[in-house]
Image 1 (tube, rainbow, N blue to C red):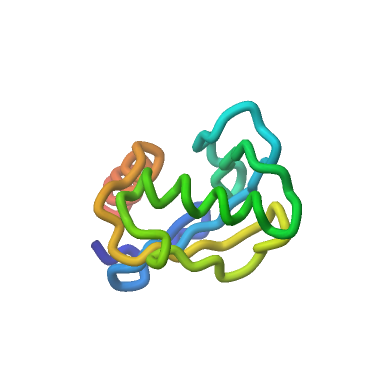
Image 2: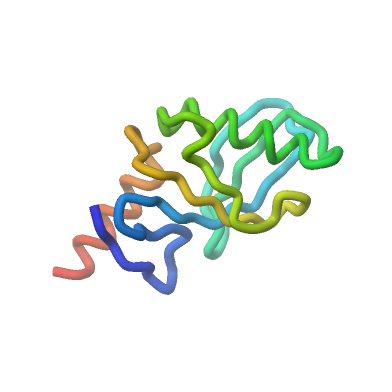
Amino acid sequence: MNFKKQSDSFFYWDGDVLVFNVLGTPSAKKDAIGKVKGDQLKISVTAAPIRGRATDHMVKFLSKIFEVPTSHIEVVFGRMNVNKQLRIKSPKKLPDIFLEKQQLSLLLDE
């Protein structure tokens, strides 16, 4: 999987590393992956935004979703901010929102 960033996409591949932009929502009722908003994916977590705990919680939540150890998830920027960029090394599973966007990009490239 080696897809270049589309100008309207919230993610791209850098070799086997998935890079994507996040709009985080801390102190939510449940942990969840939401919809795409512009060039960011909305992700809600139950943890409060205190000293980076919400971001740490998000990394743990995403490690289960993508089936990777937390050490494979790097917060490039935004650890203490709702706007983040994450890099996930060799994800074993992709949520539907990524697969749908990826398939749409492939169709548009044909």
